[in-house]
Length: 278
Image (cartoon, rainbow, N blue to C red; front, top):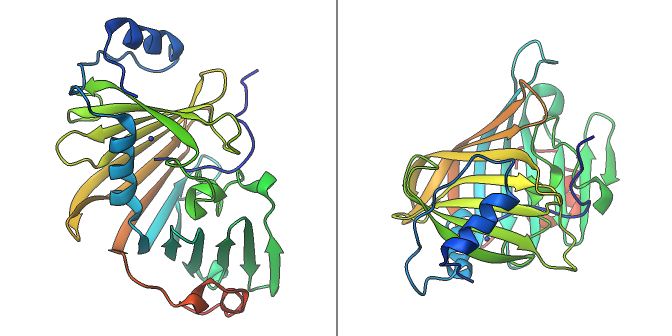
Protein backbone atom coordinates (compact mmCIF):
# COMPACT_ATOMS: atom_id res chain seq x y z
CA UNK A 1 0.00 0.00 0.00
CA UNK A 2 1.44 3.35 -1.05
CA UNK A 3 1.97 5.98 1.60
CA UNK A 4 0.15 9.29 1.56
CA UNK A 5 1.68 12.76 1.86
CA UNK A 6 1.47 14.63 5.13
CA UNK A 7 -1.80 16.55 5.48
CA UNK A 8 -1.64 20.32 5.77
CA UNK A 9 -1.11 23.36 3.56
CA UNK A 10 1.06 23.23 0.28
CA UNK A 11 2.78 24.89 -3.27
CA UNK A 12 6.05 24.88 -3.65
CA UNK A 13 9.02 26.97 -5.03
CA UNK A 14 13.10 25.80 -3.07
CA UNK A 15 23.10 25.00 1.44
CA UNK A 16 24.98 23.90 -1.30
CA UNK A 17 26.27 20.26 -1.71
CA UNK A 18 29.39 19.92 -3.76
CA UNK A 19 30.81 16.47 -3.05
CA UNK A 20 30.18 13.33 -5.05
CA UNK A 21 29.25 11.50 -1.84
CA UNK A 22 26.45 13.97 -1.13
CA UNK A 23 24.97 13.60 -4.61
CA UNK A 24 25.24 9.84 -4.35
CA UNK A 25 23.27 9.98 -1.12
CA UNK A 26 20.52 11.91 -2.89
CA UNK A 27 20.26 9.36 -5.69
CA UNK A 28 19.88 6.58 -3.14
CA UNK A 29 17.16 8.50 -1.30
CA UNK A 30 15.12 9.09 -4.46
CA UNK A 31 15.52 5.65 -5.98
CA UNK A 32 11.92 5.74 -7.15
CA UNK A 33 12.69 8.70 -9.45
CA UNK A 34 14.68 8.58 -12.67
CA UNK A 35 18.48 8.46 -12.17
CA UNK A 36 20.34 11.75 -12.32
CA UNK A 37 23.97 12.46 -13.17
CA UNK A 38 24.58 15.94 -11.84
CA UNK A 39 27.39 18.34 -12.63
CA UNK A 40 28.66 20.52 -9.77
CA UNK A 41 26.94 23.85 -9.21
CA UNK A 42 28.95 27.11 -9.22
CA UNK A 43 30.91 27.55 -6.01
CA UNK A 44 29.18 29.83 -3.53
CA UNK A 45 25.75 29.69 -5.17
CA UNK A 46 23.18 28.83 -2.50
CA UNK A 47 19.90 27.01 -2.95
CA UNK A 48 17.97 29.72 -1.13
CA UNK A 49 19.14 32.36 -3.61
CA UNK A 50 17.94 30.29 -6.58
CA UNK A 51 14.63 29.56 -4.86
CA UNK A 52 14.03 33.25 -4.16
CA UNK A 53 14.65 34.09 -7.82
CA UNK A 54 12.17 31.44 -8.95
CA UNK A 55 9.51 32.63 -6.50
CA UNK A 56 9.89 36.20 -7.73
CA UNK A 57 9.61 35.13 -11.37
CA UNK A 58 6.59 32.94 -10.74
CA UNK A 59 4.63 35.16 -8.37
CA UNK A 60 6.21 38.59 -8.01
CA UNK A 61 4.85 40.80 -5.25
CA UNK A 62 1.37 40.43 -6.71
CA UNK A 63 0.10 38.71 -9.84
CA UNK A 64 -3.06 38.56 -11.92
CA UNK A 65 -3.80 35.90 -14.50
CA UNK A 66 -6.46 34.63 -16.83
CA UNK A 67 -6.09 30.96 -17.73
CA UNK A 68 -7.81 27.83 -18.95
CA UNK A 69 -7.40 24.48 -17.21
CA UNK A 70 -7.93 21.24 -19.18
CA UNK A 71 -8.58 18.05 -17.23
CA UNK A 72 -8.03 14.65 -18.87
CA UNK A 73 -9.26 11.52 -17.09
CA UNK A 74 -10.46 8.04 -18.12
CA UNK A 75 -13.66 8.86 -16.22
CA UNK A 76 -14.47 11.81 -18.49
CA UNK A 77 -16.01 11.25 -21.93
CA UNK A 78 -14.04 14.28 -23.18
CA UNK A 79 -11.55 16.73 -21.65
CA UNK A 80 -13.08 19.19 -19.18
CA UNK A 81 -12.11 22.84 -19.57
CA UNK A 82 -12.35 25.52 -16.89
CA UNK A 83 -11.51 29.17 -17.56
CA UNK A 84 -10.76 31.43 -14.60
CA UNK A 85 -9.23 34.67 -13.38
CA UNK A 86 -6.91 34.72 -10.34
CA UNK A 87 -5.47 37.45 -8.12
CA UNK A 88 -2.52 36.62 -5.82
CA UNK A 89 -1.22 39.05 -3.17
CA UNK A 90 1.87 37.39 -1.74
CA UNK A 91 2.84 39.90 1.02
CA UNK A 92 -0.66 39.86 2.53
CA UNK A 93 -1.20 36.11 1.99
CA UNK A 94 -4.48 36.51 0.19
CA UNK A 95 -5.84 35.33 -3.14
CA UNK A 96 -9.05 35.30 -5.13
CA UNK A 97 -10.21 33.12 -8.04
CA UNK A 98 -13.33 33.61 -10.17
CA UNK A 99 -14.58 30.88 -12.55
CA UNK A 100 -15.66 32.18 -15.98
CA UNK A 101 -16.54 28.91 -17.75
CA UNK A 102 -18.08 26.37 -18.25
CA UNK A 103 -21.57 27.86 -17.86
CA UNK A 104 -22.60 25.54 -15.04
CA UNK A 105 -19.67 26.76 -12.92
CA UNK A 106 -19.61 30.40 -14.01
CA UNK A 107 -19.51 32.79 -11.06
CA UNK A 108 -18.03 30.30 -8.61
CA UNK A 109 -15.40 31.93 -6.44
CA UNK A 110 -12.56 31.03 -4.09
CA UNK A 111 -11.25 33.46 -1.47
CA UNK A 112 -8.19 32.97 0.74
CA UNK A 113 -7.52 35.28 3.65
CA UNK A 114 -4.77 33.56 5.59
CA UNK A 115 -5.40 31.19 7.31
CA UNK A 116 -8.99 30.83 6.06
CA UNK A 117 -10.46 29.88 2.67
CA UNK A 118 -14.01 30.05 1.35
CA UNK A 119 -15.78 28.72 -1.75
CA UNK A 120 -18.91 30.40 -3.14
CA UNK A 121 -21.31 28.22 -5.22
CA UNK A 122 -23.74 30.48 -7.11
CA UNK A 123 -26.21 27.84 -8.27
CA UNK A 124 -27.16 27.13 -4.64
CA UNK A 125 -26.14 30.57 -3.33
CA UNK A 126 -23.97 29.07 -0.61
CA UNK A 127 -20.59 30.03 0.80
CA UNK A 128 -18.58 27.17 2.29
CA UNK A 129 -15.50 27.44 4.45
CA UNK A 130 -12.74 25.08 3.32
CA UNK A 131 -10.88 23.75 6.39
CA UNK A 132 -7.10 23.12 6.37
CA UNK A 133 -7.78 19.37 6.21
CA UNK A 134 -9.29 19.85 2.73
CA UNK A 135 -6.42 21.79 1.18
CA UNK A 136 -5.20 18.56 -0.43
CA UNK A 137 -8.56 17.98 -2.10
CA UNK A 138 -8.88 18.26 -5.87
CA UNK A 139 -9.51 21.78 -7.19
CA UNK A 140 -12.44 21.80 -9.64
CA UNK A 141 -12.06 18.08 -10.35
CA UNK A 142 -8.45 18.47 -11.51
CA UNK A 143 -5.08 16.99 -10.51
CA UNK A 144 -4.23 20.29 -8.81
CA UNK A 145 -5.14 20.75 -5.16
CA UNK A 146 -6.85 23.68 -3.47
CA UNK A 147 -3.47 24.65 -2.07
CA UNK A 148 -1.78 24.57 -5.48
CA UNK A 149 -4.11 27.31 -6.65
CA UNK A 150 -4.57 29.50 -3.57
CA UNK A 151 -1.02 28.94 -2.24
CA UNK A 152 -1.77 28.72 1.46
CA UNK A 153 1.66 27.22 2.12
CA UNK A 154 4.90 28.62 0.76
CA UNK A 155 7.64 26.69 -1.01
CA UNK A 156 9.95 29.55 -0.04
CA UNK A 157 9.07 30.04 3.63
CA UNK A 158 8.13 26.50 4.71
CA UNK A 159 11.13 24.61 3.28
CA UNK A 160 14.93 24.47 3.47
CA UNK A 161 16.55 24.58 0.03
CA UNK A 162 19.61 22.58 -1.03
CA UNK A 163 21.31 23.08 -4.38
CA UNK A 164 22.32 19.58 -5.48
CA UNK A 165 24.01 20.41 -8.77
CA UNK A 166 23.26 20.91 -12.45
CA UNK A 167 21.30 18.43 -14.53
CA UNK A 168 22.63 18.84 -18.11
CA UNK A 169 19.47 17.54 -19.82
CA UNK A 170 16.94 16.57 -17.17
CA UNK A 171 14.32 19.16 -18.15
CA UNK A 172 15.29 19.72 -21.77
CA UNK A 173 17.86 22.39 -20.84
CA UNK A 174 20.74 22.63 -18.35
CA UNK A 175 18.99 23.10 -15.03
CA UNK A 176 19.84 23.61 -11.39
CA UNK A 177 18.36 20.84 -9.25
CA UNK A 178 17.13 21.96 -5.86
CA UNK A 179 15.81 19.82 -3.05
CA UNK A 180 13.13 21.31 -0.80
CA UNK A 181 12.79 19.68 2.62
CA UNK A 182 10.05 21.04 4.91
CA UNK A 183 10.82 22.63 8.24
CA UNK A 184 10.11 20.30 11.16
CA UNK A 185 7.05 22.28 12.28
CA UNK A 186 5.82 23.41 8.84
CA UNK A 187 2.19 22.45 8.06
CA UNK A 188 3.00 21.25 4.54
CA UNK A 189 1.88 18.48 2.25
CA UNK A 190 5.04 16.96 0.84
CA UNK A 191 7.95 15.13 2.41
CA UNK A 192 10.25 16.54 -0.26
CA UNK A 193 10.14 18.44 -3.55
CA UNK A 194 12.76 18.38 -6.31
CA UNK A 195 12.81 21.46 -8.54
CA UNK A 196 14.56 21.98 -11.88
CA UNK A 197 15.42 25.63 -12.69
CA UNK A 198 16.74 26.84 -16.04
CA UNK A 199 20.40 27.80 -15.51
CA UNK A 200 20.30 30.57 -18.11
CA UNK A 201 16.92 32.16 -17.39
CA UNK A 202 16.09 31.04 -13.82
CA UNK A 203 12.66 29.90 -15.00
CA UNK A 204 11.04 26.88 -13.33
CA UNK A 205 11.06 23.85 -15.64
CA UNK A 206 9.90 20.90 -13.55
CA UNK A 207 8.94 19.79 -10.05
CA UNK A 208 8.70 16.27 -8.61
CA UNK A 209 6.68 15.79 -5.41
CA UNK A 210 7.51 13.03 -2.89
CA UNK A 211 5.80 11.68 0.19
CA UNK A 212 7.58 11.23 3.52
CA UNK A 213 8.93 7.82 2.48
CA UNK A 214 10.60 9.23 -0.62
CA UNK A 215 8.07 7.93 -3.14
CA UNK A 216 7.44 10.19 -6.11
CA UNK A 217 3.71 10.84 -6.38
CA UNK A 218 3.32 13.50 -9.05
CA UNK A 219 5.25 15.50 -11.63
CA UNK A 220 4.78 19.08 -12.78
CA UNK A 221 6.21 20.36 -16.08
CA UNK A 222 6.48 23.99 -17.21
CA UNK A 223 6.85 25.04 -20.85
CA UNK A 224 6.13 27.78 -23.41
CA UNK A 225 8.34 30.26 -21.54
CA UNK A 226 7.84 33.87 -22.66
CA UNK A 227 9.16 37.21 -21.47
CA UNK A 228 6.62 39.06 -19.32
CA UNK A 229 7.61 42.29 -17.59
CA UNK A 230 11.27 41.30 -17.94
CA UNK A 231 10.78 37.84 -16.47
CA UNK A 232 10.76 34.42 -18.20
CA UNK A 233 7.31 33.07 -17.35
CA UNK A 234 5.99 29.58 -18.29
CA UNK A 235 2.62 29.86 -20.02
CA UNK A 236 1.86 26.12 -19.93
CA UNK A 237 1.80 23.94 -16.82
CA UNK A 238 1.18 20.19 -16.82
CA UNK A 239 0.45 18.13 -13.69
CA UNK A 240 0.60 14.32 -13.86
CA UNK A 241 -0.35 12.17 -10.84
CA UNK A 242 1.88 9.10 -11.15
CA UNK A 243 -0.55 6.80 -9.31
CA UNK A 244 -3.47 7.58 -11.65
CA UNK A 245 -2.99 6.19 -15.12
CA UNK A 246 -4.44 8.34 -17.88
CA UNK A 247 -4.86 11.43 -15.68
CA UNK A 248 -3.33 14.79 -16.55
CA UNK A 249 -4.24 18.42 -15.95
CA UNK A 250 -2.84 21.28 -18.03
CA UNK A 251 -3.12 25.01 -17.43
CA UNK A 252 -2.62 27.47 -20.28
CA UNK A 253 -2.02 31.11 -19.33
CA UNK A 254 -3.79 33.64 -21.55
CA UNK A 255 -2.82 36.77 -19.63
CA UNK A 256 -0.42 37.42 -16.76
CA UNK A 257 0.52 40.69 -15.01
CA UNK A 258 2.78 41.38 -12.03
CA UNK A 259 3.31 43.84 -9.18
CA UNK A 260 0.06 45.74 -9.54
CA UNK A 261 -1.74 47.32 -6.58
CA UNK A 262 -5.05 45.53 -6.10
CA UNK A 263 -8.29 46.99 -4.81
CA UNK A 264 -8.82 45.61 -1.29
CA UNK A 265 -12.48 45.04 -2.21
CA UNK A 266 -11.42 42.08 -4.37
CA UNK A 267 -10.44 40.10 -1.29
CA UNK A 268 -13.77 40.27 0.55
CA UNK A 269 -16.69 37.93 1.17
CA UNK A 270 -18.98 40.51 -0.40
CA UNK A 271 -17.04 40.30 -3.64
CA UNK A 272 -16.93 36.52 -3.37
CA UNK A 273 -20.75 36.27 -3.40
CA UNK A 274 -21.23 38.71 -6.27
CA UNK A 275 -20.62 35.92 -8.76
CA UNK A 276 -19.74 38.40 -11.53
CA UNK A 277 -17.00 38.20 -14.16
CA UNK A 278 -14.47 39.96 -11.94
